[in-house]
Length: 469
Image (tube, rainbow, N blue to C red; front, top):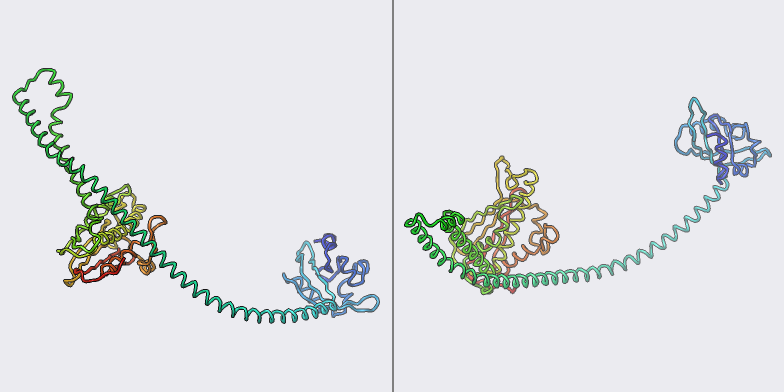
């Protein structure tokens, strides 16, 4: 920056600014310096700081050197000797704006401040600080008193809020349970109605298929006899035989009738499973076959167990023990089976779908720590324990659960499923059905990478007096 550029910049600034070089020579000043020092530019032009300041030359030289080397503002205090013999003490802030180089000399910008005015301003500032400190202390005292009052009020509000939150949570849970119960009741009624409506025409079709098979068998025998005794029928009949492809019909007709019979049997099994699952006529304690409830649940969930476009096929391994009929609430117990098996299927889909993304077409397979290939499976075991309990174990070989999930597993509304897929009530309701309704136990064992195993235990006897659910 040249002195001319400095003057152009400094002319509009109110601060007293002085431009010197590395030797202390005064290069330029602005109008504020003229008013402060009482010296015009012509009186300062060509002079150095050593000529107008009363301090020793080494002090001035050290200050100039400090300004030249530092990248920050350098403070100093000097005394100016005026032409009339008076002196002016001032403070100085110096900073280099053009470091020294072989092509250019050092330029240092000095900002001047009247020391007497600065001291006066300092006293006024201290006075204002004292007043402000007193005001702060007064306000602090008021704030402390207000804070104590607020704390007392907040304690009362927090107590009321916690009580309201607890009441609201209980109401929400009760409402959700009521809705869930009503849903299951409506679903059971609908399932039972649909099963009844399907059952009648299926019985009719299956009954008629028996006679159809007999009639067809007789007609085919008649055709075979006709072909045996009249191997050369008229030309028109021979042409019709070729058009109809009689040989194929004779071979395929029995297969069609057999497949139709198998299909109707399949529909009847589904209808029976739907009726067993809903069990609207067994809302009270009944002695039932536990295995029928499990099989009915598996039949309803069969579409989720079969292979899909994701190549995920889940194998169900049933290890049923010799169980007597168990006194229980059948429809509610079936609801527990549905919830637990559904969760196992979800866990396997998530685990093996990840394998699908990494292994391509082998999405229904992954390897264990020994490099052995494993497939998704659910194992269901039943047994009598200690001659007074029935234990149903439902285990999957999915990815398992971590500690955070396990700690909240039976909490109402807790779910790890995406929004819209899970309500977070399945296991909570299942726990209450088993523990509160049947006086049993619902426990689990799970670890990351080790799968999950649920154990349902209910008493064989009906001595347990359950609470209303």
